[in-house]
Each structure stands twice: as structure tokens, then as C-alpha cells.
Image (cartoon, rainbow, N blue to C red; front, side, top):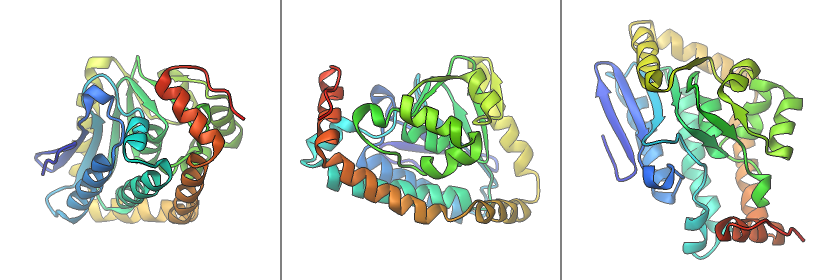
Length: 258
């Protein structure tokens, strides 16, 4: 299954799901949100799929939400409510489906892109990859499960440092902090992730699925937190701070928050 913005290629028992807006650094448009949810449904429902690799086309993994698309659609608040409904639905499926999910990260993962890394069961990053949450830099708040998953991956203090200061993590820092499992030379990222996926695809898929759901349950109410994220980011986008942050980002100037 392939759609306008998300490509799904099956190699044996492994599905490779590729965010496919390389010219836009794989920013999440409404169409991509819908297509990613459709891809997650396909992987979850197919008995032939026993592992999933999630990656991005081109030079970057995912820059997060499409801020330009928000303004083009006539209202950031409604846009974000709709986008997060698709995105969060996809994340919930990836977290709870039987096939293990491996993120293969090249280039930059920012904002919701980090949520997609954090929701994966395993993550492989290229040596040159970078991670930056970026939300508060444009006057917004987290989505894509980042406020739930990130503190559990790296700890509360480190998560707050990333969220409040918007500092970038290098690949090696992401490894030492626990955000990714492996760092490999840039050309090897997809091959390494695929090798892991093949190994897992030969294993007990239903047992893996039960393990995934047990771990998800132990962490707490992911879906409830994502509902709160959707409401919060949509409301913040409609605020004076959000409007100024988005406008400044698109104009490539420093924001002057009220």
C-alpha cells in the first residue's frame, strides 16, 4: 500500500513505512496524517507483516507538523485538532500492534518527529542525525505522545530540558540518554533497522505483541495523554503566543512573544 505522502513497501515479512514528503523535510500535513493512520491500519491488520520499519525519505526523518499548512488551511486550531486525531490514532496502533516497530532516523527528527521515534519499540539513528523538540520555540506545546513517552525514555529532568530550552541532541547524546538504541554510519541506517526487523519477524509475533501491550499498560494512559496534548496544542495555536510563534517561524525571524 502506498499513498500520496506515505509509502509502504513489503520485503518478505517486513513492512517499510516511509514518510514521503522529502522536499518538505517530511513535515506532517493533514494528508500525511491520514496516510500514516492508513499505513498503521494496514500493518496492524495484515497477517503477513511481522515487523515494521518506520523511516523518512530524503535527508531528514521528520520536521514535525506542517506549520505552513496550518496557515494555508485558514486556522491553526482546527488544523491541529484534525491532524493530531490522525497522528495520535496512528501512534496508538503502532504502539499496540503485534509487529515490533523500528524507527530508522536520518537527518533531523523534530517535534512530532521525536514522538514517532519515541513511540517505536527500537530506534536506530545515523551518526549525523539530530533531535530537537522545537515546540516552545514557536509558542506551541507537545503532541505525538512526546509529553508521555519522552519523560519515560530519558527522564523528567532531561525531557524538561529538551522541551523548555529547545536544545538539540546529537545522535550520540540521544543514545546515551536512551532515546535511541543504536547509532550507525549514515549509509547503514536503513540496512541496520531492516536487519533488526528481519530478526524480529522470524520470532514469536503474538508474544511480541503481548509484551508491547504489557509495557504500554505499565507506562500508563498514553491515549488519554494524547487527547490532552491535542486539546492543549490546538488551544495554544489559537493564542497570541502561538500566532506570533508560527508567524515568526514562517517569516524566518525571532519571535516577540507577548
